[in-house]
Image 1: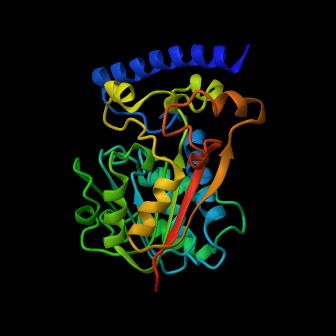
Image 2: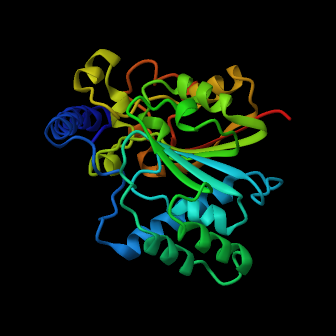
Length: 295
């Protein structure tokens, strides 16, 4: 099958998937921040460790977590990564979100997350301190705030931070420039940002067969299927531009996953403008946006 024929078929299929996503949102709203089932305890623990390890892998070598105040944007259904930050020496962790998806997560789960730390990965005294914090209801060192307006400055509660992170959140924000400006207001001098962004199509079957499917449609057609949290189709250069405009330095997007070699041809052709331009970096499926505030 030629690229043109294949892409025509994927175009039609993609419209169906977008209609399904739109219909699901209208019927049930937003409730599933990731693909791990709520009753899959082992899967939930593995997911938390995987996200935390991804941040650690991409953070600059000279960044030390010890003593840092950490802010996570939109952790979804789990604040388990926050427990791991504490176990690795962070002073405090605060999560802010739109929905209260993690409100019912228990201290018992957080302790299981700590129990699954690899031997020697963190200092015993830091792990014990993390246990004490999560066992203390209302601790000022492990906090959570939500608001439908997602005003990061207000939700930060007057605090400032040394590290701001997110995972698979930024691609759902309607206005990444505002969110980055808000993060700038609560970032201390020297603050590091690390944001894992899923740039590809989100619907589960078509993302494996046509990962750039959402970029095949002109904006007017794509927005006919708009729902809150619909992937915003912003590309790596948009994040770089927004962070630089807010005075951040060392700004770049590191590739963490790219289009499979056998799909490069069909996945990078037949795309709508402006996604057909060379500077859109359409082979990048997942990336980590890194930036640092000047001291």
